[in-house]
Each structure stands twice: as C-alpha cells, then as structure tokens.
Image (cartoon, rainbow, N blue to C red; front, side, top):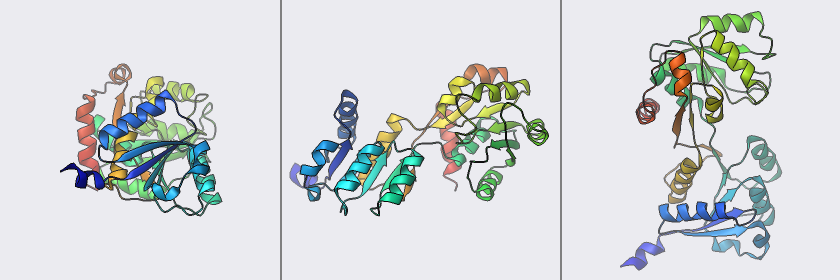
Length: 285
C-alpha cells in the first residue's frame, strides 16, 4: 500500500557548508513536513563525489553552498531553491553562472507592509516613505498598490538621517505615519536611533522595515523567519509555488512593539488577527 506513495517523493539535496546541530534540526523539520520525500544533507566537500543525477531538487543554505553547487555542476537537471541568500550575493552569482536558480526572498514585501498599515491604523491615509540615493524601487507600482487600499505615498530622499532637509521635514509633518523600506544605506544600526527619535518627537509611527527594527522601536512589521522559510521550502518541493527567479515568501508573521504602539495611541490587534487581515487584503490582488 505504501510503495506507490513513497515512489511519488523526490530526492532533495540540502547543500550546506558543513553539518551542524542547526542543520540537523532544519532537516528534521523538513522531514516532518515532507514525509514522502528523501532529504539528504550534502556538505560542499561532498559535491565532487556526488552523482548529480541522483538528486531531483536542490536546496542551498547560504551563498557559499549555492556558489559551490553551481561551480561543481555546470548544467544541473534539477531545480535549485537558494535559502538565506543576500541580494548582493544573488546578483553576483547570477552574473557568474548561466544556470538558473530561484532565490527565496524573506524580506517583507511592500504590499504586506502596506496591508499591515491598513490593518493597524485603518484611519491612516497619508504615508511617508524616506529613502537613500542607493534605494531602487518601482515607485509607480508601489503607489498604485497603496492607492488600491486607500493609502497615498509621499516620497522623500533623505540625504542625511542626522540632518533632515526642509522637504523631508514637510513630508514628515504632513503624513500619518512612515513606511520603512529595505534600504540598508538609510535604515541601519548607526542611523535607526536618530530616525526613531525624530519620528517619535513628531508622534509618527514607523512600520518596518523588518522585525529587528520593531525591537528597536518601530511599531510593527511583517517578517519571515526560520519557520516560514521551512514552510516555503516544503511548498516549493511539493510544487505548490510558482517558480520565478525571486520568490517572495508567501508565509509570514507579524511582530508588534506593544509599548511603542500604546505610546502612539495605536490599538494593536493580536497578531493572529493582523495576519488574517493582511492575508485577506493581499489575496484581493
């Protein structure tokens, strides 16, 4: 009875720098979610002795594992999902190898963050977006997404987060709250305290850009961690997710700084309620 079922499973190569307790725990959770698949941990030192045709699908953890896999096998037959791959490494590896691969992007996508704003502060209409000269985004596309949920975005390049110019200060005065973006040149450990103090003195909440900033003093953010990475990897292996060059993680959670929310008179729902509201909004796309 079980043989036909087991035959449907895939052999998955989980490529890592080296085995560890954390890797073992990661594999065990994959095994639990994929009982009919065969997950094999393969360290980079073992790749040269491996028959790549014995593996149906590949997962890589980190940039070194992906780089070693693609350099060892120039024409992989099975698809590759790269986990925990920074954007800079993704671009570099994509330029070096012609072999296609999919990157799982765990950084919060802006539609989820905008939907979080709508769920947290439904009366908000005007949202400030500050960014550095290095930040690249399709503003028109994001403006359209915001307008579909009743939000207007006001953009301002922040040349110096320690010394805001007149335009940036006017935007801050005119908006209801601020959407943090994935812009390391602006939002980082050196600048975040100054930015948060400026916003707090103006009684403006910061949403995002990620979970770490909630601990620092942002009100809330969506995020995808280890648990959500496992769910996405399992769904990809089962074939439930559409494969693209960059796959935004559809699984997410919400982090809320309740103390900061109260200080800004924001009544934060429980996270389950917020997650449900975000899902309902994003499913409308």
